[in-house]
Image 1 (cartoon, helix red, strand yellow):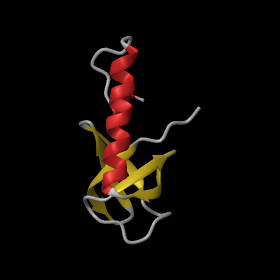
Image 2 (image 1 turned 60 degrees about the vertical axis):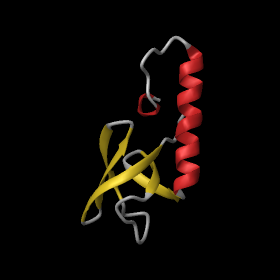
Image 3 (image 1 turned 90 degrees about the vertical axis):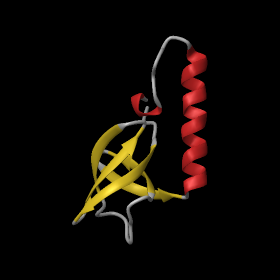
Image 4 (image 1 turned 120 degrees about the vertical axis):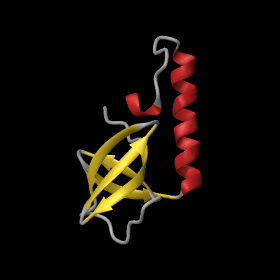
Length: 83
């Protein structure tokens, strides 16, 4: 199963972005999307940003994921980035 976690673009260099979620920073290719800017939220799959999300949807999804992880009880200290 694959679960997409919204990630915020914090840096862009050419077609490569650094994205962050809950303090975890990863690299993602922006080759599949146009006009991406620092501060945009994207869904990353297999190292590629595959879609852009509006900030409200991204933040709500992250909050929902955190709530689910907290309710699980078996993953103390887990963040949305751990999914």
